[in-house]
Image 1 (cartoon, rainbow, N blue to C red):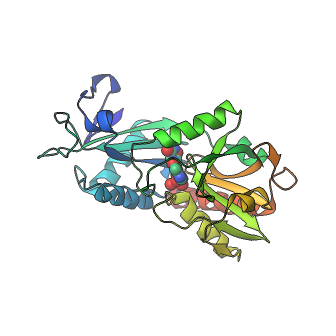
Image 2: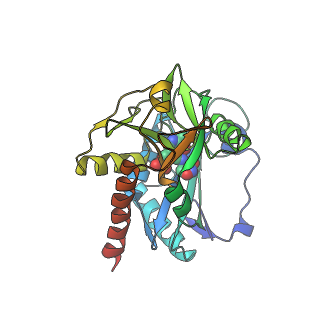
Length: 282
Ligand code: DCS
């Protein structure tokens, strides 16, 4: 079952118009929310970001966020999701193709749920990355459907037989093609500040909280490629990748090429947060 506006429908019943502005312009916003043990993780934070993204592109949501939250819970239940995720997007809807906004926009919301395992093996062993020029637009803080820069970055990593592209803009490390990036230097964490050059990840916000709880100093400050290449640890995070260590970049090992202590600590703390969901449920 998928959610279209506020109705659950069978996927075969749903047709998307060729003049939907999401299809033609990427004119819309989206979220990916994780489900652990049948419970959404960080749903409120994702919905706050969704509302913000929509506002930043002057788009209204088709109905109130509280109603959306309830509909998404029904969606996860209807699809029997224990471990998985929900993808949801809102486009500016169907209108004759002109670049400017339609006079009477009718935003279209679609959401679907998928079962997906946690990336436990990658979290344990670590992943590989390349560095790539950040060619994206200057509003990376908006979770927009326009992902070509991210798509090309990820493909470049795949072509190099790596897992992720770490973007660099004017010498500064911004983020990954679908992840936030952190380095560890002298046992302290550095990550790009949450401004227009990165998406302020929900996982990022949790990680910064966990680090502070553990007494690890966090610097929301820019760092450059040289810092990245000489870091004690490099970590990436996202809803789907959780907290994952990077063990090599551009073919060179990060430190001694094995996941580090800070990554392990954050993973343990993150697991505790997930376990709390289970306790709330029972
Ligand atoms: N930066 C970018 C460019 C992203 O696309 C994502 C997540 C993140 C950071 C991390 O944000 P969250 O911690 O909120 O997930 N991208 C989503 C995506 O497109 N698939 O999975 C997650």
